[in-house]
Amino acid sequence: MSATAFWRARRALLVTIGAVILAALAFVAVDKLWIAKRFASSPTPPVAPATVERAVPAEARLALVIGNGAYRHVSPLSNPLNDARLVADTLVSLGFKLVGDEPVLDSDRPAMERAIRAFGKGLRGGAVGLFYYAGHGVQMEGANYLVPVTADVEGAADVKYELISVDYVLDEMKNAGNRLNIVVLDACRNNPFGGRGLRTLTRGLAVMEAPAGTIISYATQPGNTATDGTGKNSPFSTALTTAMKKPGLGVFETFNEVGLAVEAATGGQQQPWVASSPIEGSFQFRAGLNASAAQQAEAATASAPPAAAGAAAAGPSAAEDRAFWESVRDSKSSAELKAYLKEFPHGIYADLTKARLASLKAAASGAPTAAAGSAVPVTTAAASGAPSTGSPKSLVTQAGAPDVEDAAKCISENADLSMKVTCVHNVFTSSCKPDKWSERCRVLSGLDVTARFALDEVRSRQISEADANRRLLDRLRNPE
Image 1 (spheres, rainbow, N blue to C red):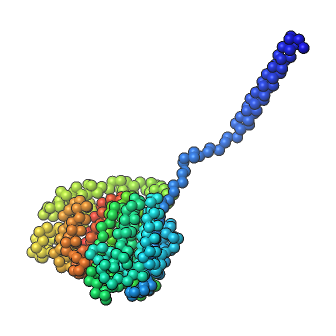
Image 2 (cartoon, rainbow, N blue to C red; image 1 turned 180 degrees about the horizontal axis):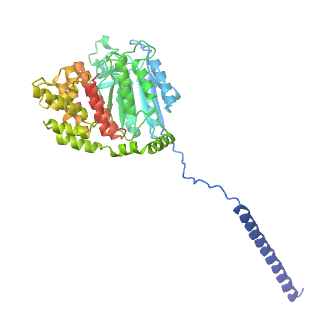
Image 3 (spheres, helix red, strand yellow; image 1 turned 135 degrees about the vertical axis):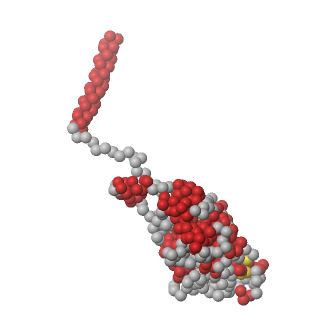
């Protein structure tokens, strides 16, 4: 083939290839145009952005539940196994995962140690932790110990080898670095080694400092013993599981419910005790309204009649209430006190003001005041509640002790909530010791617990400061 023929054939081939490519491009263009025209007449439904609804993983929950009853060397207990099973079942129903997938029952020391170590490791992922123990528990020199079923303590030197320190549990929680831990000790029974002459071991449990982010719940107050009750479960475990299942209760509200229920069930003989430190955020064992229901409730509120909405908007704030009260709190003028009531008929300090007016009226007529000899009339009036309304007996009248009256002064004389709580706690701790417990200490401890619950809930933004003040006033009027 000549060179000329070769170049002609090559050019023809290139032309053919180019024609094929152009035809293909033309086909694609026509196809796209046809598709666009076809779907232009039938609009596509809008697609919600992928970010509008995003799944939020629930906070992990991990629990270690231990129940010891079949003791070999000390008196056995009938209820702890039932209590542990009840608490474990309740926690599982509330989204907790159990260490070992079941309660740890009738365990010796090595088994308890293994479970506690596994619990600590499981918390390192950031889960909310709950430790529950039912069984024998003792205190020695201010430290609390849990009693394995094989424990045989003959002398003080045996304690560290036979028993489990509660500090072991707290250390595991502290090292985990998670935001919230709850320790529940249903172990305030009689000293099982009491007949062995071990004076260093005493009944009940001692008060412990709660590490950061920790709540410690005792079945009864320091140095006292709890009852197993007459039923299958103890009053404490029954009240605990009932309260945990109530929807919408914050963690502090839950333990407050437990305390009230146990006190009522035991005729005031047993009063659960709580030690806590401020916690980060809030926590509910069982959530209340879900997001959808909350939005519906908000929408219903927004569509309320204008008059009701206007009334709510026009209501005075807690800051205004407090500012007005501060301007008249030390006044001896009935007119000024009545001016506060006119402006804030249902204010935070309305009950205090009414009681103050009654006190001034009684003083003017020569009649005895609610608490004669008080340097600050509003204090004693607040403690006794407004007369003529049939309110319950006051803390001062009921206990008949100066230290209780001092606690009432803490509530009325301090404007800052944290100062009120600190003042009440100082009065309680300076007046009541585990070995000198009395009726007035029961009253003071109830006020102290209520005050600390209220402050913790304000700090975690579960309630307002105004609500906390109302709660303290309610406790003053209703010490039972």
